[in-house]
Image (tube, rainbow, N blue to C red):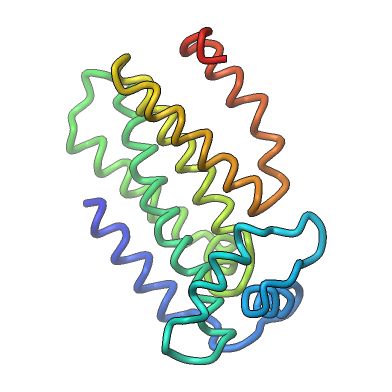
Length: 192
């Protein structure tokens, strides 16, 4: 069902993607993705570096290629929401039916896919879908770290790495740090 989530979201975002520059910050992010310049503060270096990689795709204009960044991270954000929701449902209700958990998490992912704000940001050059992707990836890795003592170090190290990358996408990620540290405190005090 996870692959279906990616296919549906990628198809929808690709079908409705903006073929050129959109208004507001879109022109700035297309330019910084192509030239590796610095956008308005806080800079978004992770976004610019990843957008630069997308400019090498041999399809459409530069603006279309940079808009693909948002569609790509939007689709995988919907997938990660599916995975995180499924893990949380099974954590809250351990005896829950696996299929019911999958259907519930699929429904929540589809609701998020078609939400007006996230859909709009998944079609244009903006940092928000990438920021949501990194946040959901960090949450997913923290949930995986809870599962077993043997693999905990690996998952926490990856969560720290991706949190660092997320801070280079959008400065709002700094506001999530206290919650992550509190989670780690309750998970295992020695990791702090």
